[in-house]
Image (cartoon, one colour):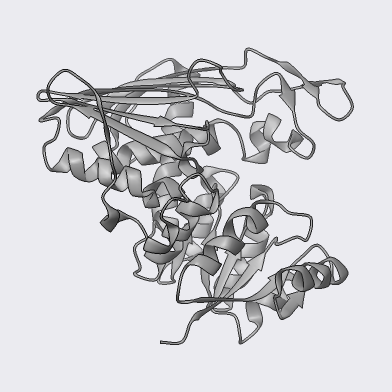
Length: 359
């Protein structure tokens, strides 16, 4: 079959997520050809094209989306720019893969999901493609821990700590759509739902305990209104009780620890980095009282990526492989995740237990 011809919106010669993850991921998976890119202007796009060996370059994402040699448009820019870039690609009848979050708000995500009806779309919830988490899901399904009783997860948010990096100030306020709730918590809740089932009801507490943080470039104190502490408890669809706590910044003690307890055993997931959905994961399990490391079977991993699980492109490459099979979460799934986030926000605002909208 002819390869899927890809056009990346946001691929820069100066680096960034598209260069770090998407370019090597596409190179690792048979069935794709990186054919085009667009940048902030024609000159920067041309420079990026020369650096990455991409033949078609554009200063306008709409031109990229309309070009007949592009089948799949990958949107890998800041979330406030997503809608303006996704809608022309959908209108051009192209497949669209958007990085997460899909929209800056629930309302915007609803609009994009409606526009995508009947079209091939995907979102960058890479945790669903992680070999270790897919193996974890199957261990649970096959009864490794028996009936799941409870699960507890504690993690760092990586950002939203005592300082803000250059170009990340838009993450300090909910209006930018890229907060600890919409990024690390969303990835966490979605991975948990894949493995154990989603929340049927939840209670949430959110707070901004660092209302001012230091700008790492200027050294100045700047305001932060996005929550940097998120604690959620609730009941999952299978009846298990769940507890999640995300904290801004990083911790020398625990940056990601996920425990699953059942009637017959225990499973533990740990990550080498707070951004677990793009980090190397370690699984341990016990049915005897002693935790032992579990090796992910080779069938879960692309052979060409063996030994590369610490690379940011690892789970992204597995996501591209699944996309060829039509097996990635789409815009409708993204809307369901955004509705869970809305439930967390409503619970935190009201102080009440709520049920996520299941539509």
